[in-house]
Length: 610
Image (tube, rainbow, N blue to C red; front, side):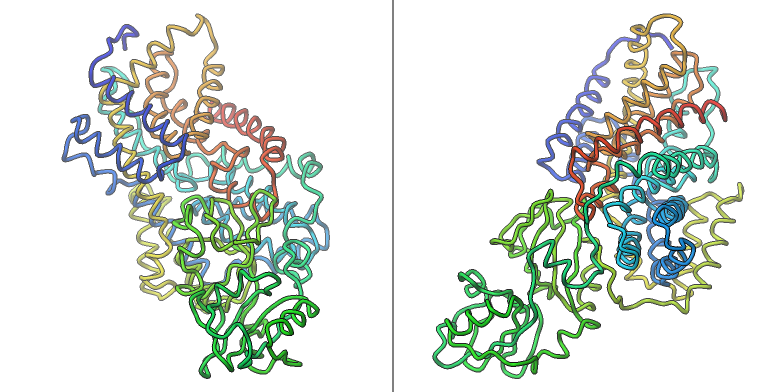
């Protein structure tokens, strides 16, 4: 490949689209999946990708593999496997915090080898919550080590995270543009990165066991499964539930609940009985009439004052709502807004949480600040932790839509523990099929999905709901951009000019470290998927120009794309910021050493193996 390759119109167009993608991702004014769709359309309109290939990303092996791993993970979760896991971890820890942390992080890291990282984190947050409640260990001391192990463990297999799933497709597409005489790149087997993943996971466990635990937060953090005193301390949500009956003289008659809730001294209104119908989370537009009963929560003194001021009868004990407020049936829970949630940018009023999902929003924890005033009008952000009151069944139904992740360990419906052995058998067979060189990994994974559906481990509608379509759409739309980088020669042009500026005699390992760091920087801006798609073609061409091994350079990029423990742009880290009560400064202080360790381990291990 000649470093003097001239810059063509197609190259300039592709580089312009790459720059546009980075700017749109950086300023975050447009949703990431919308950005990806716009780039896909522009690739088609400019002719950089042929019409017959433009939408091929949706049928690519990477996309199919990601869909399959999401469904398989949901199937295992339905069997209650993680509830059993929490009990096992407690028994093995023997009351030792460091042993409990080591066991939990190790098992979480191993689980992430066969499930998508955000899905594993979503499953382990209630597990960590239960462990925290039973042992008294602050959740803030557990979540970050678990998140780090999940990210590290994603390197154990080729389906552990999105960048590695993408890598094989990008390697195959790169073969079409290799110079004559270059060795054809082959797809990596299911467990090809296993030694690297084991080294990464071991490094994470060792770091937190011997060094990192000193940096872990010492504050109480979040222990969602504890008694109501936790919510009183963390959010100022205190007191018991009381019943207030509306008299004929009450000024509340004819008012809506929304109007009552903004009155000075108004308690939290959690339930309403009207016309012999009792319901939790009544809608804000529900009107109050004579004889209606309000279920409110707050300190008794404040409730007495409110009832006297507004001519309401305070019941001595719960009569109408005794069953409705039974802790086994309903209660307070915390949920986190993930980066891909459609809730982002919308308020509780716009989402009609009470009317549509029967969820009462009590407070929002954002960047260590607890917000309770006009909380229903507050536009939500990724990483916000919401405090909700609801019937557990309604919470489980809303959580199934994947718009938020429930942190609190609560009684869930639709669990199928009797399918546990069947699910584990199907999963074991799936992994054996994936090990076979005769059966492609996507087919093996989909065989496992089909097995779980036929066996009734998971229902078809549940399988659809378990798929994170934003991730799928983002990947499928950006894959053609990687193809265009390669086929237009833009990647080769950048690689050639980069080599020209590198001093003669520079060791390959130093170039690899620089490539790894550049990939991490890209992932902070354009996400791990975007960084992989843009950097793998560049890495392959850079290896050819430097007389290095293209496979080594490409694998370093794919692994480095997930190497972000410092900011919330990593989906796994963003999910634990609220529950762990972590600040941005704290993440940088704790996460930067992990990022440096990660980089050193992958460069060393990849070169040892390849």
